[in-house]
Image (cartoon, rainbow, N blue to C red; front, side):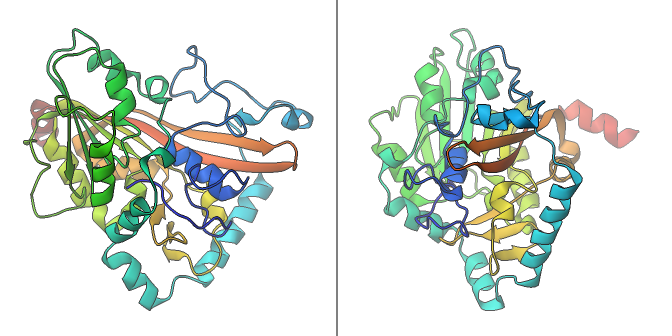
Length: 351
């Protein structure tokens, strides 16, 4: 469940730092999902940044907006809110037709497979920001004295999350498992020269599979960390409940879910034209892949009573193209959820 598309149009608004060097919305969105900041679009964070503060460059003077390529914590004014609502209303008035909707909803994995079959592994960029955004992995799982630990990445794509983690690993007892419902994505991981079967396992597995089958080699309550980076947005809302049950089954009590995905009103959402809306806040890109845009309240409801919200933040970033005088407002949600211990569940039920 990684970004895909070969459609470079603004209408598709896909995730593509992977498609071309052309400065388009598609490029920006894909750079986000691939996790590779670029000199044109993103300002690398410093080690002093709190991962859940999302940077410290504030735009206090509107006249200074063109001084840098990116600004953090940029709030919208009332006029922008109104314009966003107007764009969403136009999308609602021209949704995907019923025939195409059934097509896109019936077999979503085929579109991801097509993408990976058309792109080589060097098309994807490693997520080098992981240690800043999710330091608990490195403190608790990859440190030399961490002991036996299991990390599961759901939607592993070509391995651009699990390979950076493995490269930083000093724990001889670490096990990393990467799963994806795209057969080709899993093949790319296995074909990589960075793949080491002594530490890394892979499997073709769908997070929203309701058959009860778990990824090969994993049992219930056996995983310490589950990574969900731009994964839940590919699921239809009716699949969320099954996905959460699978996460709950796999994760140990006290285990962590590390989450990052698209936020409501993100530029990618507002750029969609007619014929892309599948249902409220859920769209199909030009290549047939799907994307949902979340709110914090939705995430709290999705993860429900089985998980404590340890951290949650909305990353509001203004990216600017100083040469073309373009402003691009990006919104992402990031969170860390902790699975309640069994004793905590009992306490809540008896209150």
